[in-house]
Length: 287
Image (cartoon, rainbow, N blue to C red; front, side, top):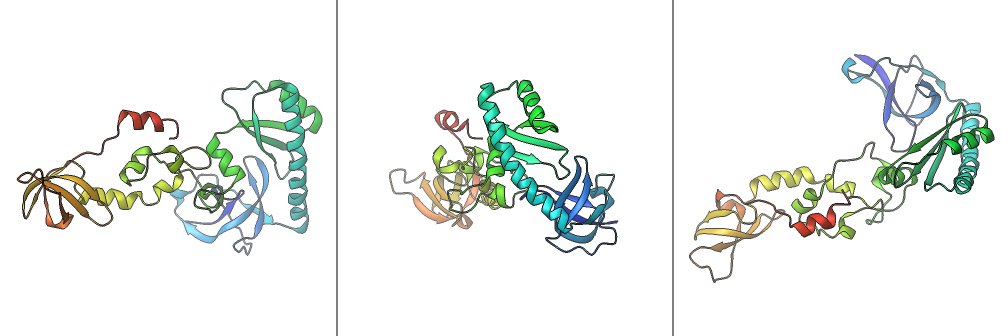
């Protein structure tokens, strides 16, 4: 077991473990630590606790010090410099006529490097741009191409629910989501209904999927053959949340379907969730 604290460098970013040494550190305290990128300043998001050795990626680096007033001043100055660097880079991109969209500029705490994040439809030859930026800023320049999900995470915004984007506020990593999840949750398969601000499937499809997985196991699907108190029939509709089934009885094929609870039927042969070719083609670009 090792004693660690959790430090995060970006909002909703990944948490990293550090050795707290003998410092009295509380939640939301700013600390200066040594990372692979150099000296960085981050926020305590997990107080001192013991974790298994297997959870730690060696070597465990130490907290150098709680942030001082000078450190806080450097952070504020870096924010101002990032805004100026963003505008300079944006202007240089236009001058070089590169087909790329600048998303964010980031200056490391020790000012040894400036990172520019951008999106583009394909690969971009930005070698001349890097040389031009290096001659302006006289420091190490790094350009990173990111996806549109990452762009939404960095920039933030409001989702269709009216709340700030999950990826920008609390999701450390992107959830694996698929069109199948939307189908299983009986959601509209219209791309405008199930895609987020980034244009990809909404991360929140994952939140209730475990409950739906359980309900799908205990609820006969569309097309399933079941035995009811009134005879054998085929499921023509179901409601996973209420457990209500509509069963077309074999002995009364022209009558209205029997409405019954899943607990009152015995499964003979289950059905399968199917997606039409048209649905797959329409939704293929948003996963």
